[in-house]
Length: 128
Image 1 (cartoon, rainbow, N blue to C red):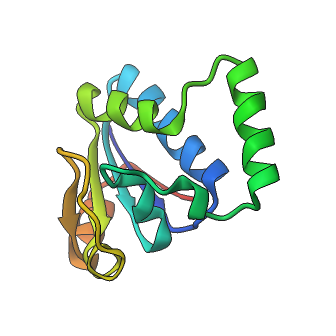
Image 2: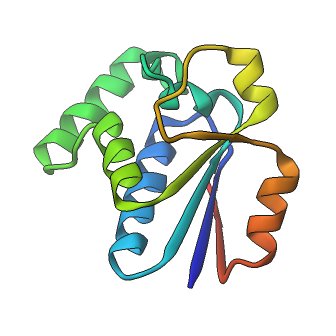
């Protein structure tokens, strides 16, 4: 079974959800691909800029605090776990070029055609 996740929003909560779902699907045997576009590319840089994404600082702080209380790991750790588990992570080429920065090792740059090819043959496509 193949799951393709399109993370096209700049909301940090959606990014958490994308990687939690990706890890869960991988754990039950799915082939998992995560395609990140737009400003969400910032979380996949070597020096992630999650503070720039989606929410005012107080909301980000509150969400991070609540997630810690629930035992949810920081987003950066979830991304690393996903890569180690074999989840394929791609960033949209135009967004990567526009935002600059060095990507985390293992993250690939791909275009819309790559996403469409993955989605075409997927059993499930999740858009966040």
